[in-house]
Length: 411
RNA sequence: CGGGGCGUAGCGCAGCCUGGUAGCGCACACGGUUCGGGACCGUGGAGCCGGAGGUUCAAAUCCUCUCGCCCCGACCA
Image 1 (cartoon, chains in turn purple, blue):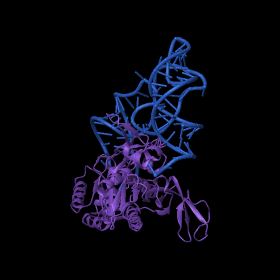
Image 2: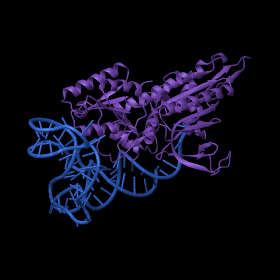
Image 3: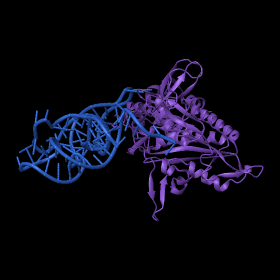
Image 4: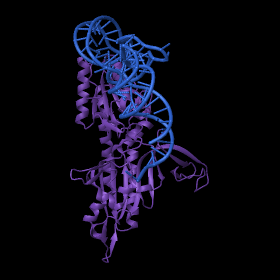
């Protein structure tokens, strides 16, 4: 597998997650705010996406895919074509028609709803996609944390009334809790300003990290939390205790849009009495790359990344220390194929390099468990099963190590 | 978009102040010895010094412009 690790820190990186993603061979930068995902990095993103999809499907969301290239008319109808300035990439097609690259998809999905939803019987609906967004950021920064092109899971709910929206909003909030927990993140759900998205209410999901661009305030007494932007005081508005501030990365958000988009785009339905009413909408976003970066920010040590097993690029890494020793290779290959047959994703460091390099790289890329096979232990018939996180080492017979993979990585 | 910093071999850097035609470490290729925490010896390849213009007998080095990247701020639907 192509995993180009770097011994030294590239000069352009400052954030820990950025440094470790570059050094570990997860990503490479093409230009400011534009990143190439290498095999290891893409595996992490796909594992995150898989979790997101499972939890979205679990609340009844249906996956679709919308274009990245949009006609201007739809954006003109909601007014955002004019409200949004340089941040929108604009272009013309060969006929001179104004187009833009999608920064988000409210306009497009509402256009779809307007053409397809006729009756209260068609509601509710929840549609989602994992799609590229393009935003001409004034200042891309901190590796994949703030980029000009990025993947987003965006879902949209369509209901006949506020009560329906409230239900879908809460379902999304609950799904988001499960997603971020499964990704091993420490996070808070905070109240936020709906901003240009419009609508009545919004919450953000914030992963505490020193490189975060947002500041959240937390009440240690009653659990109240909010984005610093809207909470100006230093006393909790709910219980009066003092608030503490923390930097955080925004990893997800949920908005109650109401009829902000359905009205201008004429997404109407007929209710039970035959009255025409606007569909009531919500929109909900998650940035998989930000989850990956936040996970690294929250879980690393001096040697590298410590992936949570839910989003690690592999379940276990096998390190045969001497490629020229037939017995070592026989055991390594046997463990590799056995774990693979049992459905685990296994990385084997089959490079003919010194043990020190294998140890260093394994710690750097941070796969949760390492199986180390060396001559020293093999004389006693054992291999090492090592936890990247705790550094605990168990000396086990090869068969026991195979069982141990099932226990630690299974489920 | 304002302020600051940096562009020299794949990566990290020195050389620039005081002009004389480019160097170190790692990486890479080949040969050999190694094999439990980034091994060792030998040999070798690789850079028109981000780009353009100017000054000068001579520019990586001085001057002007320009492009790119990073950091702080503003912005962030």
